Length: 499
Image (cartoon, rainbow, N blue to C red; front, side, top):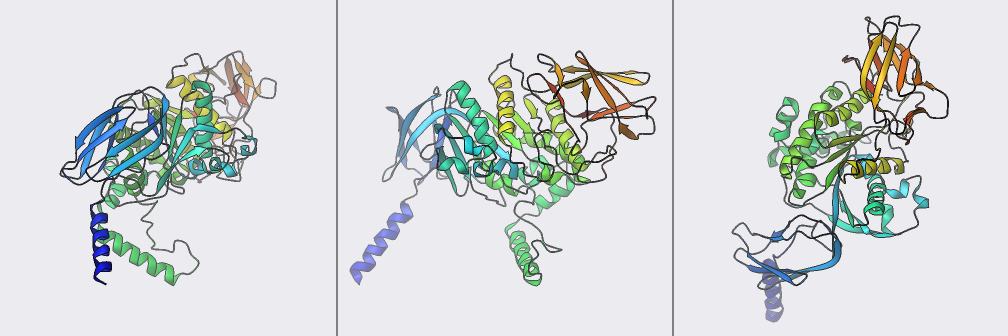
């Protein structure tokens, strides 16, 4: 018995001192950002002297009093594989099959999470791409910012694991890999059913009193009491997911996703951010704040990554909902507009239009291939510098009101404007006069211009294009196949429905 007790005591003592560890993103099969110094860091016993070796280059460091150690790996071009060996006084960690390439942070809600096994074109994907890798971050909300994520793993894109990849991120990464022939890492840190506020830091919410005051309440005691009350409500209301009085302190509560799934990555260099979110903010009046909140999110994340020019690529919400005879706006259209307006306000922020590839009856459209390809086109043009590439559809730049017609001029014409399917008539336009009532309008292509008119609006003042949740028909494209960007010239806050 004494021998057994001594053995157990020695084992417990050994485990207590086995403290050399790394953040979960530094693990087998990782992709590190090329051409930038990478801070490799972790935890160990204070004062522990460590060596970090990669490709016959060894760095030494000593663990600080806060139990954190750091070394800076020199910038390396795309390539690999490498092993990295970290040795302490009594412990050793080896991480294997490490590549340097381009890393993209992919976040948002369920349409970013949407996996390849549900995507409508996935059966056509036969080829394996071992240098496309996804770091899958499992859902993890926290009351304060974390240094590391919870459960997470790097996955290699092969026949087995590809099914678990974000479909949008996979198709995007595939296009980048085919074009640039370098390893591509996609960090999937997204949480379905979430509004924008949980992805924002407390500091970023300071201009939004309601959300900021909620974040201000977060303490261990608040979390405990809220959970107890939620449990009581669920027990008293069987079968109801969120009964009256229930407070979702996970993915619907300000800062909680940011703390657990965003903040841990700010020491991990990335090439850019892909953002696909907004569905859960398509309510009145929340939709009217979305532009400001998205602006503050971008600014906050950039500051935390210490990169004010970090590229952001925003997937605009697709068409969704019922078609209507009389043109009308909705909370959905105001979020769509907000996503594009942020890209107009901020440098190195770009919007991907998807108003033609949604599913009117399903908030989770299964065609993610076109979305991924359109993001890739924007990234190849804007971040990789392929300036001759056409990556977006016609964007209105000038509106001329001429008596009973309006003439429109566009950028991103490419090799020309077209009415997809043939002819010169375009759909989706609406006009209003001084009474602010919108009516369906006729529109014709005339070279690189569009002329719009309506018998019901003799003196048009305002024009809208595709400014409704689910336009009856989208046929306005450039010849490169990109749809025109929805727009309006009025500033009415006239949403009456969600969609």
